[in-house]
Image (cartoon, rainbow, N blue to C red; front, side, top):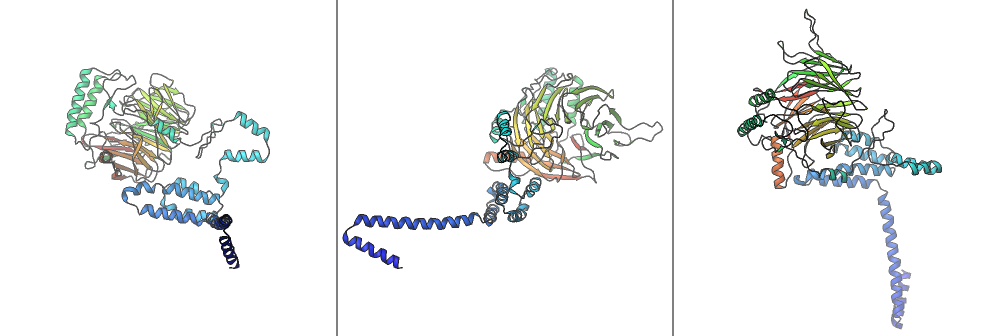
Length: 589
């Protein structure tokens, strides 16, 4: 109080004497002193606020409430922000050594997110040291120990490329260093490349006479007029000339195709198929894979004891079983045994005509078997590690393989060396699938991405990012526009190949999705899972809604599940949708 009275008297004296400059200088000094005092107080309050761990809880809670209370038009997009904010709030709390507050924050809001696999890893972070890269730890150690000689060698001869993510363990490949991470700019650049997604043109390759093809095209056009436009996706597909030299199609094959077209029945959400169920008995966890021939007459299984067993699915006494041995007087087995691999068989597939069978094994080889001769014809060697999957092209002759060596390879039956090596994945290539026009191959990997490759150039032209675990199955729609992929967590994603974006995730399975198959007209998608169920999804109506919403600028509704078909207690290894007079689904457990 005395200081204020003294300053007031000083100002009065200066005004009375006319010392204007001295008075202004005194006022500036007082303002500077007051601003410094207020800023120090605000800085102290701000530092107290920054050290308060409760600010993360309050901030995330307010953001969460606001996102959930927003309009439905924006809610789905706003809710996507919560998960990365949740992760970084937790990591900041751990970095600031608020361990108890971080654990409390994690358990309070973890139910908001379905990233179960990532959350388990995140929950194990209890120290700021867990947040550092191994590269940072290496540099810190070398500087603290003054290891200048080693540091000089590393700087001169070793180049580190650090990417976020956890690298898989590759114990048998000491020279390989895998760092999971995706460059968004590179992905955007890849997805801008042109893709011709239509069906295969009858004029490509070395096909049969034009008269036969014209007759078939007329028949397809006539049948297409009878189908409903909203459920038929094939009728609007453009024709694309195949880049590969295709094998000559015989007259008998063309006639069988025409007969198959005549016998087809239309499937949609109102006309669902029935089910034909084949079970391998007494396998004792030794069955690794299975496959069904295109006409449904043969079923094959690949086993951990390196054997391949094929059985006829249509017999006088009903379906036969893969491991069952007949007790008749002749003592004949009910299956054909193929032996030649020296490791467990991981995949098997029939050629389109069913006259050949391909099998891939952990012995790094692929073997071609003749179902007529019941013998091994060719052994293909090229991969360096186990081959997880092999698939024939839609026209036969060519096939593709996927391996633990992080590559996929394209082969032809008449050559023992691969025609193309598709390299680019950062981890195992687990599954492979041909496009319907034979110009592209899709691969699914443990690096959680799906890639589309040009078979002519071997170049990656699409990268599909969105899965949270390894991809186990792929399927192409009959018109070639859409692709479905299933992962280890049970999530199925349907992708638009032309744009490279996900149309809608299909959530319904709670375990690995091992098999996917489209119906012949593309109206339904069937999925088989380790949760002992087969689920049918309405694809046609959802893709139509997507196109309408694209025009209107809205967002598409999720694809709906129209039926679930549970087994008793057996997982579903593979399935195939065949259209006959009475439509049904083959699936093997």
